[in-house]
Length: 94
Image 1 (spheres, rainbow, N blue to C red):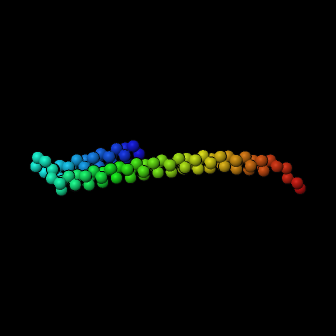
Image 2 (cartoon, rainbow, N blue to C red):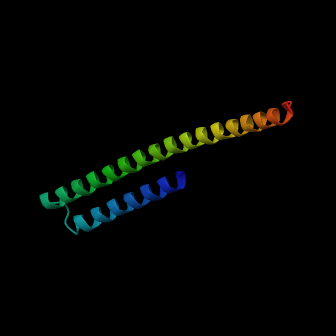
Image 3 (cartoon, rainbow, N blue to C red):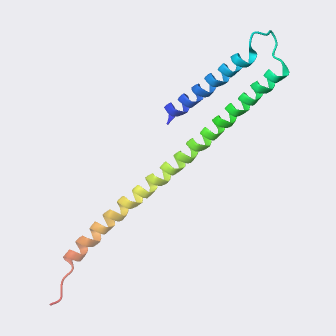
């Protein structure tokens, strides 16, 4: 998951940098339109990073829940085996 996060961050930073280069053009100072485009790109980048972090946290929570369910399943399987063994040893009345 860490690799995915790094890759997405790298792509977002690259896209943001490229948008800055394209928006800046050859002029010495950015005009208001270029500044607004840079701010828009920055906002989109931050929103994407925040969404990625939320998805990573949700994935971690789901993984934790899955691990708990698997542990519970293992306990129940052991209990079932114990009960089946007790039933097989139970004296039958004939």
